[in-house]
Length: 354
Image (cartoon, rainbow, N blue to C red; front, side, top):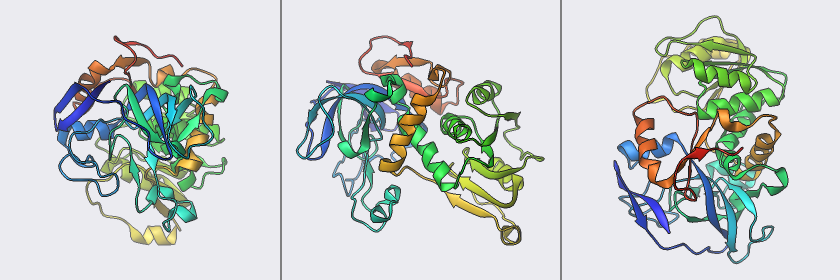
């Protein structure tokens, strides 16, 4: 099969490699559609950070060049020993992640923090290829939901949004502020609105705010990327950007007893008013990854529940040969679609089928 293989930063090659075989508890998928995310772009631009290109991964044992791609849909071709609940030909959405099921986090329903967590496309070969093996436990059949393979490839980032809402304790009655309307911010906006929340979404791109409104935001605000925004109020804030300005905006918007959910990765330190944290009984929680068994099925349900197609989020599907071009655009900060989709099944770009 053909695969996009990352050898080092800025060294992505299209190569012919062997089709993998599914191990115990795994599915062999014929890959339909793959989402490319910021992690893929970071690894391509200045990695390796997570990818085990230079040292062996302690759980998967992978070392050396790696096939990226962890947001995927595919059809079941073969099942490894011990797999139940799937049949050949099933269209599935996959988060690609695996947890041990035995550590202190797994047994309490917090598998995102599993002591032996790993994921395809991050810690061993992934889905930017004709075929991919994935843990069956990280897949959900989407045929009964009636969504396409392109829409199913959005399930993993939607699951991150679902996880963030759970971390934020959303009940559906809150006033929510979403800071950042990129991929994850768009899905958080939609999921919060679908839960019944009044959602305000802020971003520095007016086109993305138009999409946020279509996804259910009741209010949108155009912001300066380098300055905090005053005058906003929310019971729950989702900070997606990882920027200092975004974090300051979020903290400033919290009403007493409010919660800030930090989804974006902060890369610098800032001063905090810890007295206000105490006197106003504020909560600040982190959200990272997903608890697959809980978040992925709900993500698929949310994708299926939208009355209009997801083409405003992911309008185009690119062939495998254009992966590097897409990664370069992302690392350069070039304006593009909210989500970039790739398919090894096409020879030229096509409109996404949602």
